[in-house]
Image 1 (cartoon, helix red, strand yellow):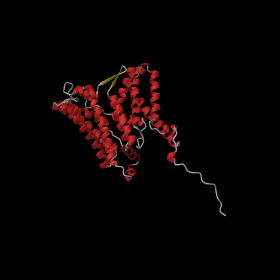
Image 2 (tube, one colour):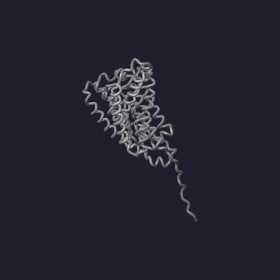
Image 3 (cartoon, helix red, strand yellow):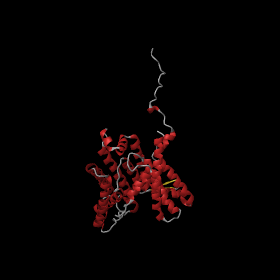
Image 4 (cartoon, one colour):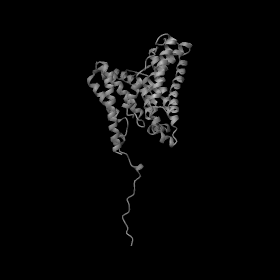
Length: 349
């Protein structure tokens, strides 16, 4: 006689299990930054009476957009496991090239704008090429680019203009049309909004679409998670890294043109230190320093936190010297909060 046991319960395919909304929420990398943004908003709404005015909203969004335009591609680069310490001065380089080329060649301003685009993309390609060829850390590669661009910005400006700033090009052909594209205002509901807010929203939307909906987005996460494993399964690591640096260069070009067409002249020493602010915005938004985790939306929230803090201090009539303290405190708190959220998300899997 053979003993017959109870039939085994059918196994459920894990891929068919429904994920609860709470688990999905805890798995979002930008959750911590959303909580932080809400806290910063409530804080300044209480301590600064003018913070909630409609005109203040436009000012906060403008401050956020000037950081957010760069923070979005920097976030993608960090998800891919790399850094770019030259991003801040690259913005200034882009503006200087547009201005000086147009002035010296007495060409239509748009010629200088497109020459600047090509040269700035060349800077990004250089960073990506050197990274993939030398195998040196991106910190070293882009630090070298940072120092070279800082010297070139100052050296070429003094050589061509005789001073540390460019010549005014406001009366040249094409200036007004370029200003409309890169530095104009839009009035919505009685609130003046800079066009940089539209550039920012477009770049965040494109970056989010790339991360979520495209093969290239999968490559970015794979390269940032483990480059050797990604290469073993056919991910084009070199192309992915170079593409990420080109994305940072394109955003630097947009920011540089805004800088030029907002003020007509450019100081050659501007931009130094901004690269850290872009990285801070991405980290506050949930990106890991080690790569493989983060989102473009999170970088946008990090930029909004930056905008609210920088302008909220002004509206509260505090000493602006405290801004760096608040920025550092937010970086630490956001990093700790993001780590806690990530651990909770892993615990619920």
